[in-house]
Image (tube, rainbow, N blue to C red; front, side, top):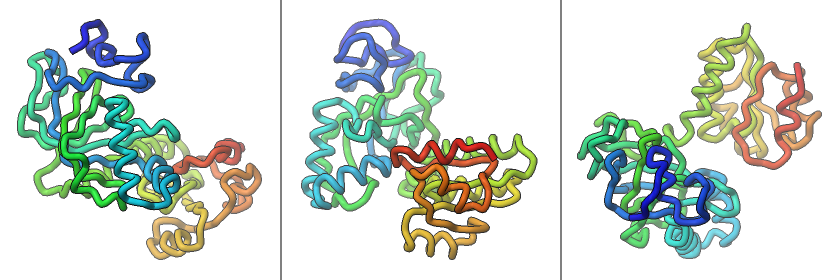
Length: 277
């Protein structure tokens, strides 16, 4: 294991380049031996973030073997799942198999946990070649180990929560949580959600309504997504503007919304989202 300071933030796990945090690093140390404040997780399943999987699927023409090989290459070369094109990773579910005596995370061997920090900063090694993954979805059955730092975050899963459901929900838990806080601080605002048919978008719509939004509008790119979202009843209105067009978002919602939640990775979508109501 490498030596160095900065254990809580994981600086000691950075192999190259020196002097950066784990997320910015090109390569991390995946040594399974844990320091006093680290935790080792026996990996059960990865959840690639949607942008990363979509990029991999497109780049390899949907070929599952090529997608699997690329994910293995990234993890093998970088010691973490950090897509160099999208800059994103995902999260994982696994079982605690070792915890240092000084770890502040409160985890113990045998706990099944979901990591709530990105795979872009989590040391990760795969031991089964992803043999159980068909390459056709974002959820990746896997065997290997991951390392959590003192400043990492992980949630112990309820015994009655299936792992695929836990991954689907917790992968995007930050978006609805932040949406609820922002909406609750305003007086019955109108809320628009870009990318509203995805996991984070649907949960953000529900969170906005529960937090007191007077009207929630779901914005999606395709007719199929619009149809599914309308049928769900999560939004008061559904529209299909070009999220990259600053004038299209307020036009689609009837007026500039008080709160806009961005759940898409399309370049340029920030402009329409920042127009004042």
